[in-house]
Image 1 (spheres, helix red, strand yellow):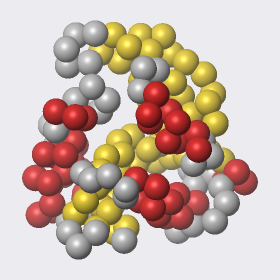
Image 2 (cartoon, one colour):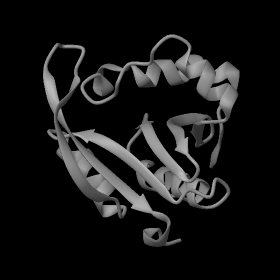
Image 3 (cartoon, one colour):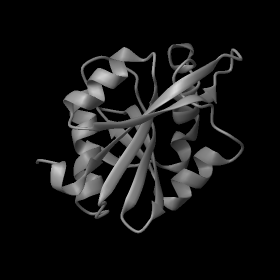
Length: 150
């Protein structure tokens, strides 16, 4: 089930966000980013008998949202988790657009989001520097409210 993150779950979120398996794909949290996202109601938790994933969203302007981070700690929960995030974003949060970016070499994530209905919109060359120092291209994708199907 999807719900808002609680302050006492910041350590879980930080551990999953910075886990070695995620280091090549997720931008490390900065400063109080996790606490601020929790306080603003923009950090969502997938609860499967306890926290099992998180999604961090940002409202850029009225109706235009970004899925900044998305991670799960066990196989098999990604699709229902994303579906719940989409229901939240296009339902109660009334998003017109939900965008995201993925490193161009992350074929698994590109496939995951494309099969969920996100559309590739373009590539920014060398737009993100990994903690290893490598610069990588980012693929921008989005879903519009009219493209989302319940």
